[in-house]
Length: 233
Ligand code: ARG
Ligand code: ZN
Ligand code: CA
Image (cartoon, helix red, strand yellow):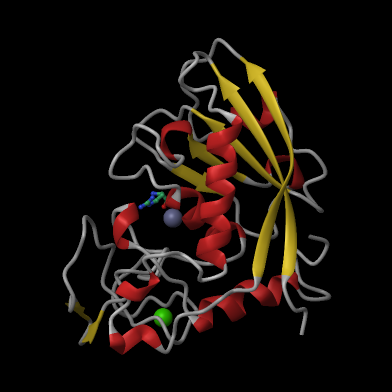
């Protein structure tokens, strides 16, 4: 048992205008959201329906800002082809979570690299306006980063990116037939069970996602353990 794991974070702000050059205060607020969500100290956790309340997990993973790098660049929007990472490479990605905050084209809120990928592109990219207080409402409470760091720590979408039989490799997240959007009412039934729509790994609004499950916690912590693909963090 590792106890609480602290993951140091480097933030790369890549901007072409002043809106994209998010403030230190916004970055700190984003790290707070990340910590509250991963430690189950988010103030909306009491909205979890009783069916799932026993599955709410404090992942015992904590994030500390280790440095912020700011880069002015004339590119007004980056695609998901990792050119932003090529322009500003990750700093010691085996020991630090690298986060690029920038404008992303195509209406994408963020994307992440799963464990086991190339170190040159390791980390997560989030839309600058998805940070808390940003302009990407209803995706402006910082939960895009929570979702993306979930992927970075090996979590799949709760519908497994397939139909009912496609697993997310987590036993306590009920089988689902596809993403849920908006702010679903409870219960939302798919695959003969109630979907855990309020899970960070669904596609709902920021205000409508507020939990990781015990099974997700254990999947994340497995890769942080000795011999795991992110043990050096
Ligand atoms: N679509 C993106 C992904 O799958 C991010 C989804 C974030 N959702 C949110 N409510 N902020 O990685
Ligand atoms: Zn995702
Ligand atoms: Ca499952």
